[in-house]
Length: 405
Length: 143
Image (cartoon, rainbow over all chains, first blue to last red):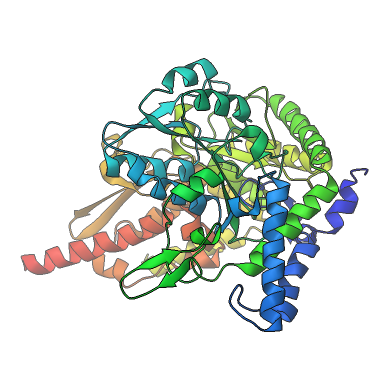
């Protein structure tokens, strides 16, 4: 199927608007993506025609809702190549997913144990582990990131010790765009019997995800960063783990039998899905992933690489430009600063010209500070962005720089 | 000039600009003026929280009037800071507490005070009010 970005853009009504009288150039996809009409309509259609609580009713609507909800789960399992739908837990998003793992892992982490993370982590894949270590009196060890924004794999290997109880890392960095060699890293960790949790928030919309091939123990991602609705995400966990770990939230849906004294829990995955799920969200997520599959993830990667490459090249020509994150394997994210200029000032002026980028720490304060900065500008691309938009962005950036110098 | 008159003067200055970018160019000019705060106050103690652009604020009382000095590491924020100082510094706590910050809204800069901007400006506005209240209480208890 030919990748036709003009055709693709037609499906995204939000992109047609003007901001401050200028055409919107939306380069903030790492924060959240825009939704194609089919996703918006799927969510609406659910509420218009199918809405009912799932798993419990005997009536028609509840059967329809349940069937569709479970179909969405099966689709996600298939999409990320999980072994079974029981390994797919619907959550509110990546942050909740990772918090869930860190919480239920508590009893397996004791005084003197180690949790290993990297210096490039988003706060959502850093703070839960940090807090776990504080609670259990364990140590948080951090794999450093080099000046190019890459992990030193040898160093990583050395930091996997007999005391390490979990390795948590990002598949793709939201600040640096670095794609980490997760399969190789999981392999290293497993040689020492160390489980691995992967933050897939920035990868799911940009490259193929195969959890069986990676062999990771946990994988987390959000729908809203992959053209799906907010408020829904996935925690993938290997069945062997999910079976032995306790639930992290309790209540309706996740129980089997309840008396006033004791409760038995439901089977997978329901054991980890307390309360009424975000059914509309799950259906929206399925629709979004189908959209990505239909468009072709390889085509998407190729297109985004082209946009990223062009933007990188154009930016490099600007005097005083400092690109942050120059890993060999990168996707869709371009962080930078211009010497002597505050990202907030540039971001504000770009906004006046219709260009939406993000400024600041990007919820990854340690990695930004490791470059000696208090913030960067970040342009992050999605499948609907064009080379023409890059031209507008570069032009606007040059104008902004001139205004501030 | 009263605070109200100073605010009106700022509003009139800004009404000369039709284009947003010209407004910002003017703000940038204002922001580029000499540092507005004594180096010794550019520390964590006087730092008002703001995760993107930082703002330092110092308030002193001289002959019953509040003297404000402030600075920011982002030029546009600094421009807005300079407007606040121009309008509010040199007045009594009572006069400051009796006025409002609406003029920023009128000149179209209110969005910079929104919490989502996390630029310390909203905190600075709060802090000016807190300083004024504190000085007011202090002078009442001294009487």
